[in-house]
Image 1 (tube, one colour):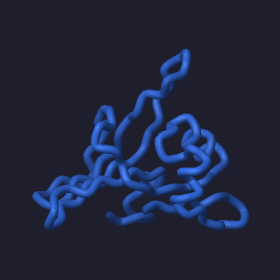
Image 2 (cartoon, rainbow, N blue to C red; image 1 turned 45 degrees about the horizontal axis):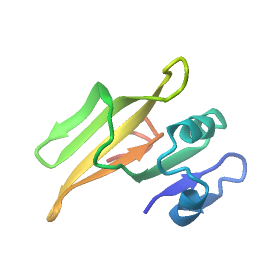
Image 3 (spheres, rainbow, N blue to C red; image 1 turned 90 degrees about the horizontal axis):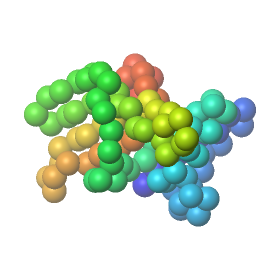
Image 4 (tube, one colour; image 1 turned 180 degrees about the vertical axis):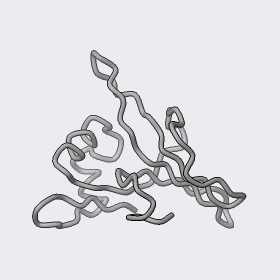
Length: 107
């Protein structure tokens, strides 16, 4: 489950609505949200292709990193996101967020 927070009103959009509007797998849509100063967090797909920009925290139970995801645009623009992976009883849980500062959103 994920929530998407938009600007001025600060309202959140439930994941089911984000899915309806194609925001969960649409990095270009996420780029537009970030340009509008919106923030989001949601589950990351297991086949996510990315390049690590900077590790923020690496422990046996937590991987917190800034990553670059290449957008499918003519200029192959990249989108900087934060990938947080937490080890649980059933394996690793992966989350993507546009909140890049761990002080604002601790893992």
